[in-house]
Image 1 (cartoon, rainbow over the protein chains, first blue to last red):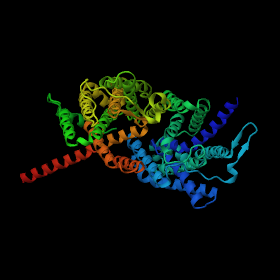
Image 2 (image 1 turned 90 degrees about the vertical axis):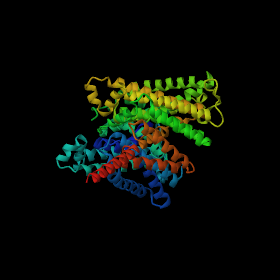
Image 3 (image 1 turned 135 degrees about the horizontal axis):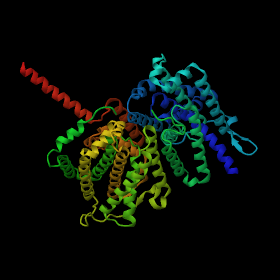
Image 4 (image 1 turned 90 degrees about the horizontal axis):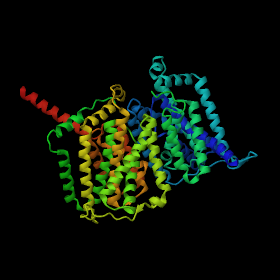
Length: 288
Length: 339
């Protein structure tokens, strides 16, 4: 029973973290049918930016994190405009190759700049303790992940459902040509969505650095994981992504608790089984 | 994949209208020339020959059938471990080991392909990456069998055909690998121009139309996947037999990605594109070996981005461009003469 509760709680924490990082991926894939293997780069860069701002520049924690997130979102705009958008209309393979190229470059550059070891994220006093829930003691950082994760989901949901930008974004996901014909600037929507996703990933990378340590191979290590969340949740589907992320978070946590030796094998088997049975996602509409 | 690329098969067709296997003869002459010209680099050249085989298997998948896989290292490493273990525990005859590895690679591809080939696009790519990660994790887990991080070693290959020892300089190893490459290349060339190969190319061009025409698309793709897996297994076996060590990196994602880079660099959909791309990549890698791994990774990354943006059809595109320019120049000269 204790193990079950542990799996549930840690699985939810991990799942919410995966949701934060992968949600940008699902949006850009839904929007432009763009396969991005480099999305983890934004999470890693967010982590490095926050560490640098707080440790080297001496910024307080919260402003450091906020500036890091905004900086990554800002960096992603020229990247989308000048590099990524050039392969939107190209075959999936070209997108895969370009984004692998970006991953390799960023892995190499981070290794050269920050060293190949894990860079530890500074956390303020009130986040380094732990909280007693009565039946389980949770480190405060996990509570941070849960609260930021839930807030992100709610915020994104409101953004997509209640704002003008959200309407434009959903229209573009449904059909780019029609949306464009209706006078929606789909290029602008794509760029903004890309920046939003990059910022979300950076935020996830920062608050989740205790679970997924910031090091140069980060984008390669977790690449399958982020892509699998999208494949399971369905492209361009917010709730689907949350469910997919929670499911994969649970599975990964469960395998780590129950069979730590075999956890990565079991996890990959689970991913393969789920995706081969439901290639269009759990709630799959047929792929376009 | 909407561009019509009927040309390559026609171009190759002109090469093999005669009974003589001309491309293989050229490759044999070049290979033997290198054998005598660079006797101290035989180990490195053997590595190139092996990588050409792996990249050819990927070309069959991607270039001829349109199946984009990022997990071909699974079959390569699988073949390598199979050949190594076969030599260590059962029999150390190289050709027997090679056959076992080909069967094993084909089997891995068959089992995974049965599941994966129903998926398209993103899902398929993720499945192949996940399969690669799975085989890596399994080999790492079974370290009592595979040696884990230390690698699998301690087997000694029997002489080839019972006569040619695998010598310290790698002479036998190189000629053996070259011979296997020529055989596979010939077989592949026959395959891609056969009716079966043409139906595979049809699937690359338009899968839906091939389905409506009544082709057993799934079955053709599965067959191609199995053949490619077997070739990757052969490449892995050659690597295990000539280097006499099998390491975990033979199963890594980097291995799959590098093979893909070589293919894209050379150009997909032509067998000689795979050869050119591999040779260029391996030679650059060889001379960049002094760079630390990070810098080398940066070089690959930049190469990938540059190829996608500027040479989407690979280096064979350069060949085509020069050929067009030359023919235009000739045409221009003719025009001048007529004046």
